[in-house]
Length: 288
Length: 255
Ligand SMILES: Nc1ncnc2c1ncn2[C@@H]1O[C@H](COP(=O)(O)OP(=O)(O)O)[C@@H](O)[C@H]1O
Ligand SMILES: [Mg+2]
Image (cartoon, rainbow over all chains, first blue to last red; front, side, top):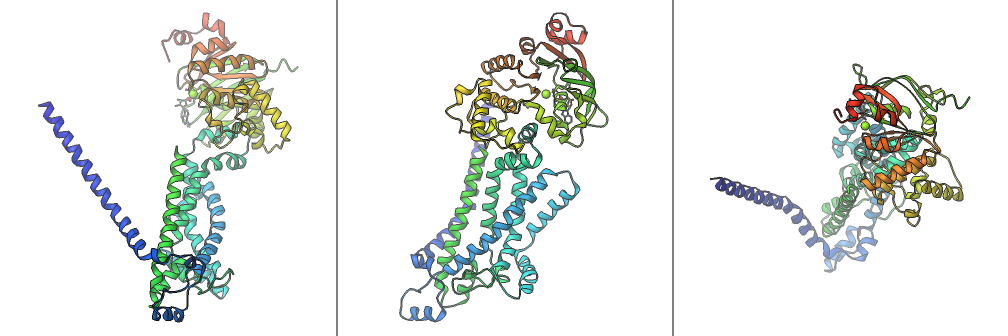
């Protein structure tokens, strides 16, 4: 009797396990399907010049296609643009985000902190296209032109909530004894934060920054309103500038350049996946 | 004059976490210089709460009220700047808490860094060496000073934390069950260390291990439900307790 019951239970356990395995596999299918598709289509385009040369003109591309040669040029203008836009966004978003997250973690019970925390959640939910159009009104119109600066403002707004949250959450899960031990030695709150709490939270915050970068690096809509695009490598921050996701959109719209879509996509995908994996790895290492 | 004023004196000290209840009720006691004073009592009787009042840890939480007076060398600390008080009152916590991102070397010097005090390299070396020798840790760690403090064993970590507190040359060292997370051998070493250290610093130690109180303290407090029931020489208290409650606790009937 009892034996029967146990057998029945074990069978149920097994069934559950199999169901879970099947669903887990199913969720992985899209990821591998996407990776495979982009890899198959894109890998043949990757070459040294793909990363060092700017986008070819439609005319050059047309000539190459007519001659049956591979399309010359690459996405260097996009890579340079993405790096410029992104580094300016990071330079502002990281310190501001950490400061704001620190404030929220340290003043949990204050009304003002609760409001800011709520607003942070709201900003995180704003569709990126709206952030794009708002930045257009706020930056592009007064500056009388599209620019890398405007692009980085848009990405900065999108990164801030993520960095604020990860800072706040990481500081909150640190044991209270750490802060108390610092204060018990006579340190003031700011020094204990700088020398004890923030260093201890570094892993979590860094992970948050990486995730924020990987979240915005593929954003296209906000850059359409702000950075616009540029067909050659440009280093100035107050002129229209290119970015990798913008290039993918441009390639898609130009029949002569469509071959370049997949190389650019593969580059972007690998970049984002690497950032994500690094972030996961660091988070895991930190939690040990 | 100096000798008449006790190093630390509680005067009708009360601490409450909520409006309705008091966790420490009207405690009055004078602590003697260069002794180890043990605070005993069953779990939840207010030992930690009383101890944490001495370095103004309660100031960190807006809901906690501290009333009465706590005099440090005759000066009421409740009216002083927390930072000034904490520099003169060291604290060692129940769980060893070396700063995880700092090396052993930097952990010893953490108090200076946190107070914004800059020291020359030779002065730093001197402080690290003398304080690690004070806690009998120097020989074990002198070759790994640049490793993280968290690599050490629990007992070593706790001695590192004591060294970190002593480096600031406090008048008083507060310890909240400093050995409860340690094995018997590490506990014994810390106890021997405290007996040695009392020559330099006054120690106030919370323990719910009666054997420990008996072994190391010369004076003992017995607390019950937030009140200080009995305070006196440890030997007298253990051999001839004045109050029924103390007696019941000591023979294991409560707690
Ligand atoms: N942070 C807190 N908030 C509210 N009540 C607390 C807090 N800490 C301790 N208490 C209460 O105060 C009393 C004394 O606690 P504590 O001083 O930690 O006791 P002990 O250290 O003797 O075990 C207990 O009743 C406990 O529940
Ligand atoms: Mg306690």
